[in-house]
Length: 179
Length: 104
Image 1 (cartoon, rainbow over the protein chains, first blue to last red):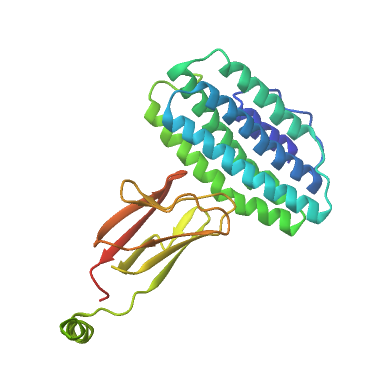
Image 2 (image 1 turned 180 degrees about the horizontal axis):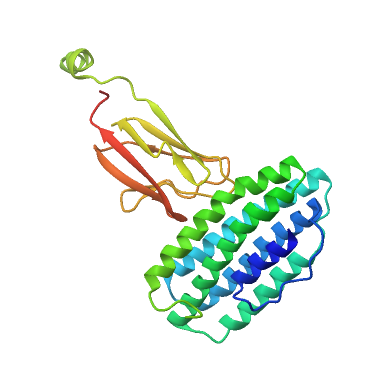
C-alpha cells in the first residue's frame, strides 16, 4: 500500500524524490497527517505562485487552491479533534514535503510564462497523484468511517482542481515540463 | 378606481401564479439540478453543501458572490432568457438557468 502511494507521489514529482522505504499500512492518525500535509504543501506553493505570476487566471487558480485546501484542512483538523486523533508524521508525509521542496526549488529560477507553465504542470501532476492516492491507498486503508467519508467528500474537489488545472495549462500553450 | 380594475383584470386574465422559490444544491462540485427553468419574479436559492466555497455567476449578468460552506446565495429572476453560469472559483462547474415570462 505505502509503496504504491509513494510511487504515485513520486510520479507527480517527476521522479525528483526517491520513494520512501516501505512500511505497513497507514494508521488513521497517519492518513490524517498525510491529508493535512497534502493540503498544506499545495497552499504553500500557491502562495509562492501568487508572488510570482503575472497571469490573472493563474493567480485566481492559486487563490482557489489556498481557499479550498484551507477549508479542507480546517475540516480535517476539526474531525481529528473530535475523534481524539493526533495526526502522526510518517514516510508518505515526509515524501510529500520533500517533493514540495523540490518543486519550489525548480520553480524558483523561473519567471513569466515559463513559471506559469511549470507551476500548472506541477498542479496537474500533483492533483492527479492525490486523486490516485485517495482512490487506491487512503480510502482503502482508512478504518474510521468519518475519516473515510471526509476523504470521499473531498475527492470531487480534487477532481475539479485537476480539470481546472488541465484547462488552464492547455490555455498557456507551450511544451509540458520534461518534454 | 382604474388601477384597482387593472389589478383585478391582471389577476383574472394576465396574471401568472405567485412567485416561487427554487433551490439549487451545490454538492460534489456540481449544481443540482444543472439546468433549471423558472419564471420572471421567481427566486433561485443556491445552497452550498460542499466543504469549499463556490459562486453562481453568469459573467456580466449576475453573481451570487462567494457562498461559504452551509451558506446560500440568491437571485430574483428579472428578465426572460437562457443563461449559462459557472462557479468562478471552479470554472469546470457549469449550470443553466432558463427564465420564462411566466409559469407555464
